[in-house]
Each structure stands twice: as C-alpha cells, then as structure tokens.
Image (cartoon, rainbow, N blue to C red; front, side, top):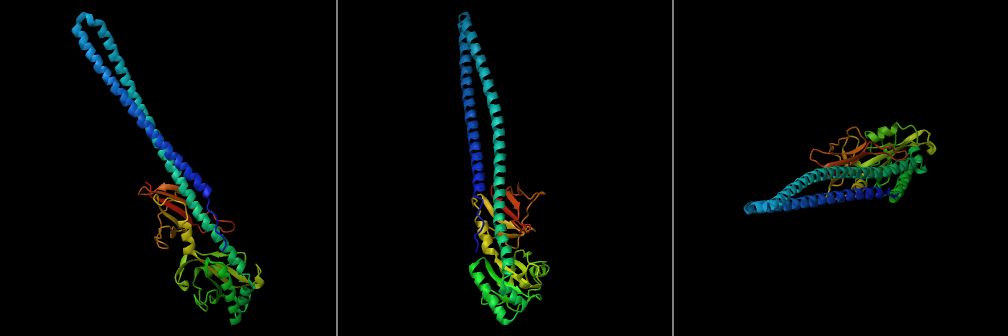
Length: 357
C-alpha cells in the first residue's frame, strides 16, 4: 500500500495559535475592563466621602457664625471638587465600559472568524487527504489494466488464463491492502477473473447493471478512468466501496482495441474512517468531521452516523469554501475538493461542525 498524504500540520498549528492569541486578548481586555470599573467605583466612593465631609464642615461653619465664614468657603470648594471628580469618574466609567465592550465584541467576532477559518482549513485538509489517496487509485487501475496476465485473459478468457489472472490479482492484493477485490470483466458484464475467489466467489456473475461498468464501456483510451461514487456492493458482502475502472486494451496499448474492463474496489469504510477520525480537532468543541458527496450525502463521519443515508444541510452561499452558523448556533466549516493531479475529484466536500455556539 502506498503511504497516504501527510496532514498539513503547519496550517493546523497556525490556526490553533491564532485562536489562542484571540482568547488571550479577550481575557486580558475583560480583566482591564474589570479593573477600570473597580477603580472608578473606588474614586466614586472617595468623592462620596468628600461630599459628606464637606457637608459636615459647612454645618459646623454655620454654627461658628462669622468666625467660620472662611472655613465655609473652603468646605464649599472641597464639595465642588468632589462633584467634579465624581463626574469625571462617571464619564470615565461610561467611556471605558463602552470602549472595552466594543473591543470585547470585536475580539469575539475575530475569534469566531479565526475559529471558522480553522474549521475550513481542517475541512480542506480532510478532503485533500482522501483526494490524494484516490488519485493513487486512478493510477493503479490504469497501470494494472496493462498487465500481460490481464490483457491475455481479456483477449482470450480461457479457464487457464482466468486462473493466471486471478493469481496475479491475488499477488497485487497482498501488497495493496486498501482494496477488497479486483475484477476483470468482459464487454457483456461477466466477471472473468477476481483476486479473492475464496472470499468473494464472483466469477461468472454479471455486473452490466452497475453504473461504473456502463461508464467504463464509454472510456476512449487506456489513459482514461472511471471513479465511482461510494456505494454498498452486494457481491462484496455489502461493503462500502469506491470502484475505479479502466479499459483493458489490445497489447496493453493506450489506444489499442478495447478488450474488457478492469475494476478495482477500494475499501472505502476503513480508509475514510481513518481520515475523518485523524483530523486534529478538540472533541469537546467539535461535533462531527464529515465527507459529503456532490449531493451532500454523508459518505464518512467521525461519529459514524448517517453513512450513505443522511443528506447534510450544507449551506454553500455560492462559495466553494467558508463557514457559517447553523440554526442551532453551531459553527460549520466546509471546503470543496480541489482535486489532485489528474484526479479532478467528484465534487465532494470536507465538512466540520463545531459544538461551540
């Protein structure tokens, strides 16, 4: 089995760092606001005490008569200064509360955007990983379709040549563990040879009704391939598979006369599960990591729910990627498959739904 693509850990670490910085700034801003409000309230308390002292001084100066006139003037000035300080403290508190409130709101919005960007990056990372993996599958099927054992059996499907091709498939499967089986089919849809006849006795079965087989009959050259959508295959014990096909041609030449169809069945469930469960997210914050097909059908999910049955209500808003809040207030990030090399992808999406509201 060829190694899978390496996750883009640099992007993940960068988005995590941004999120941590946003959280730190938000916390410090809230602390500054609390300190400022606390100090202004302390000033208001002191000015209140000054007012009481000034009032007491005025009362005493009134009792003293003309001898307390000068002291009354000082007391009145103290009272005026106290009132001015109180007004400044109230204004300071109002302005600080307003400004820090705006700052906290802005930081919250920035943190939400940063979190959304992180989810988009992780969604892209997930769908890129599977794209690169499936690109290799398109290379495998075109390469193996030129194998002499395959070409000979497709050209003359005798029992001996079918057995030889079956043994060849068995050797391939022992090295490439991502496949459930390999089938060589004639133009009538009859399976001529397979790689695991003991496990999956499919020889002689007719697959002409399968969409991947019908698409393979229309391939123009050996350079072309069919990448099938994910489906359960009864002949493979109802396993979830992605079937890739190439045409087998005379002499293994790209533009030789077509002789048959080679189909390789990718073990989708095991590989997809490794992808969605391997995305670096905090399980306490993230609800689901998913892969959706072009019709938004769930084809892989970290929680194992709805596989090949649920259609996720993804909101694209005209974009290939982005993030948004769903009806429950949870943050959802998504990214369309970018494809890889000659594999254009099938319109799949990586999607990550966060629990954070």
